[in-house]
Image 1 (cartoon, rainbow over the protein chains, first blue to last red):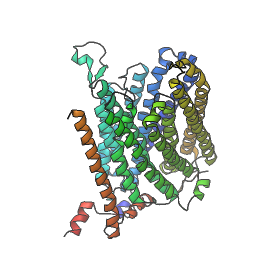
Image 2 (cartoon, each protein chain N blue to C red):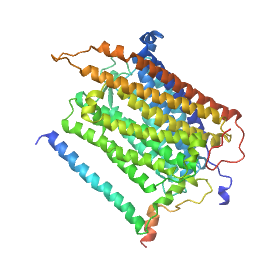
Image 3 (cartoon, chains in turn blue, green):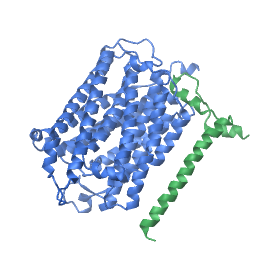
Image 4 (cartoon, rainbow over the protein chains, first blue to last red):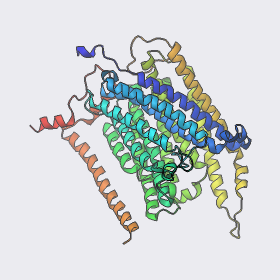
Length: 488
Length: 71
């Protein structure tokens, strides 16, 4: 044990990715708030010429929050908890450190350039997969670097049993690798046409119904392996660690893991209900979506039961509040999704605002809350300083919780109103409303959504400020806290 | 039988197969704990006791354990 005496966990990569998480989070949410306001007040589309239109900005919003904010958060937390649960320091391998730094810089520069490319309208026009082929190649390289780094760290570990969080991060790596590669298969037209058009342009290898199927197998599972799996990995580490309580049932965590892996990949076709894909495939998508409630709730209930007998922590530790609320929103969105995937409900919900409502109660309430909570937990350990302000954290929590509630309730009402109006017919079977009638009715709900966006963004700025002050002027800690995060 | 139908049946039977596998896994987890072969709940401590100097909850890999048990 002598050799371990001076050994410490190396948080340099976790810190770097934490900064990126905050940067991309701010950018993604800023653009999101702007486009929400554009939906309510269309004149906001003309602020920056072609660069400020909804159609240009929407892919920037989605890609920045998915591939910028969330992926940075996944990397940051991996480079923190990966070391801890494997009981090995990154500093023990120069190779892994160099690899991690290459990954960081390539990712930082690649993500910025990819975002700029979207601003200039360079897009493959596939939802959540808009990056053109050169950026796809960079994404693949970054992902492989991360994979090698993760496997490398696992290879030199002291703790031989892989903690459940590691399983989830591994699944995230493998899932995204498979999905991203297959969905982004494309032919760069410039090179096959002898130099015609833009070198950045490409055409997908799939067409028609097949394209739709591959796209939604990707789209839905990007939610699975980007927004669910790694976030479950985070909560399985950070909630027990922060509360000092071991997971309620480790067996349930294993079972939920395999259940999730088994079921999630088959549910994507629920995005194509009432379309031209084979009927059995639509039914399968619906059925698997409903079954998906079980493994999702298995994890969420396991998390809530972890707090058994320790619910007093909910009142006096705001970080526990963030995590318990995240878990609750996970439950809400994983019951809402299956309901929307039922054919008759989908007939009303499809193409309406209920869908972005669903996505945002999951992402704002679950993903962002959990990533922020993870960073709050990591900050005093990484910077060796107390959290700057507990009060600020509390206010941020309530502001953002109110924002999420306003967001999804307004979109529920808007979506269902819209769905009902689109299908309403008079006694002769003629449609009762034109599209613009629905837009007029929905205006107040769009305004509420824009307001909720502003509130959430302010909350995120409070979070960024709190972390900045923690780094620079938080009270210095003499030793690393074991469980509860110290805050002033 | 067209390609669509074959795919449909293949999906159905694979689902049944995977369901059996999943339930088999549950039985395996509980049975091996009941027999005293494994204690899964101890792995929960990996997150709580995660200092670099802490004693690992398990310091042998699954294959090493298997070899020892089957000597």
